[in-house]
Image (cartoon, rainbow, N blue to C red; front, top):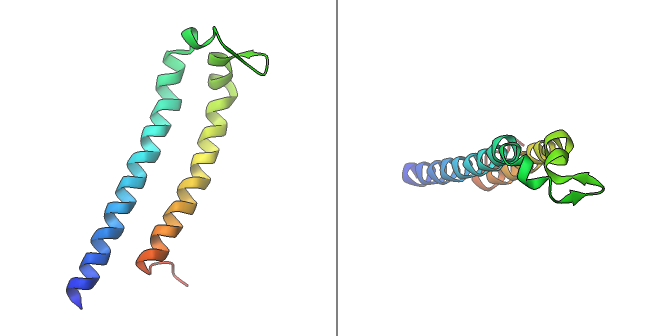
Amino acid sequence: MADNINEVRQQHWVKTRNLTFGVLIIWFIFAFVLPWNAASLNSMTFIGFPLGYYFCVQGSLIVFVALIFIQNKMQDKIDDEAGLSGE
């Protein structure tokens, strides 16, 4: 029984850690990589705006808000799988 609980906790931790790393990688790309390359992205346009400008002003913010909701939903699913949903 104790081994099963430890195994479930270990799987929960691995899934939570992997989700966190994935979210941080996406955050890093939109927070640092795209703004660093904004000048080269400006050769393309998105809804009439230069793409680099759009990502720096609005696109990254949309991605950050979406990341919050996606991360929350995925973490809830991981918690439910481990029986830690609190319900």
